[in-house]
Length: 140
Image (tube, rainbow, N blue to C red; front, side, top):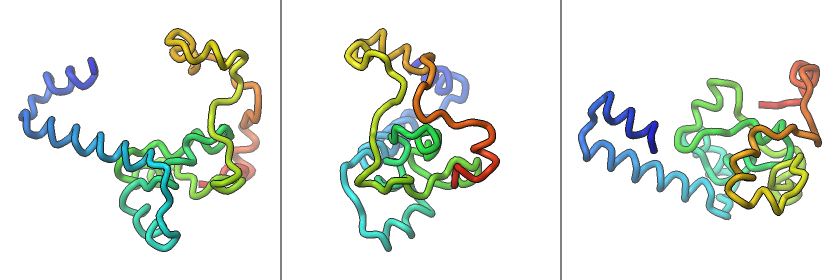
């Protein structure tokens, strides 16, 4: 919220512009995180324009090669532009494991302090090496 407040203060958008952005942001987040699947044909077409639930779900995979992609919340062009687009999970959506690898004590991670420490914990499982990236192990 502090970053948003700083941007609003620095650029001075109207209250209506801020409200429209927040509605689009929240609506996209609800749509992206919906536990729903669109039919394959429409999903394939829509993901060229917007981030679909199947597209974003890959971001929540336990496999670091997949979780380190599909960051977009609304427009999918950014992931294609920056090479972070992951078309499908390696194991498919039904077999893909969702979560975070490398947590020594998952129960502790549910407390605020543990959640805030997750980005600083070493990844112990399924680590992606520099060689993997250049030998095609990661498919955008």
